[in-house]
Amino acid sequence: MKIRKNDNVMVISGNARGKTGKVLKVYRDRQRIIVEGVNIMKRHTRPSQKNPQGGIIQKEATIHVSNVMLIDPKTNEVTRVGTKVVKDATTGRKTRMRVSKSSGETF
Image (tube, rainbow, N blue to C red; front, side, top):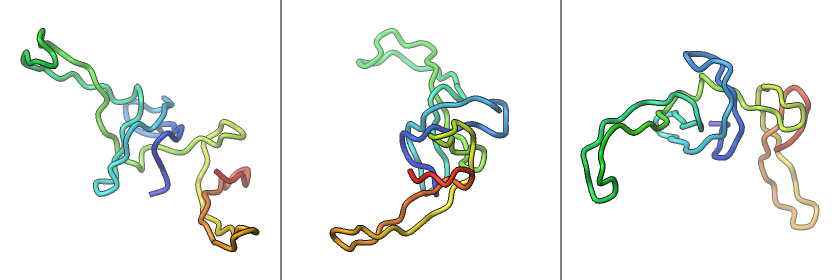
């Protein structure tokens, strides 16, 4: 999965098409993510110690990863993502970096 927590993404399909937001949580096993302000659902809750009033709470529900695209930090446009192996000059260790297909920017 090429999307990580705190990435800025845009929804490309579904009811929330065109909305952007920050990734709050990633569920790798189910290939789903929670995006801030997208796919809001209403949950009816009973009174508890945490919420003594009870009532209807609005919170974000998960959406599938295939319905979002990463926003390139350089151009602020949606982009496809590739990977590139970069070798560190001082330590000689290889690390895998994400690369924007449109601008070539690593992030």
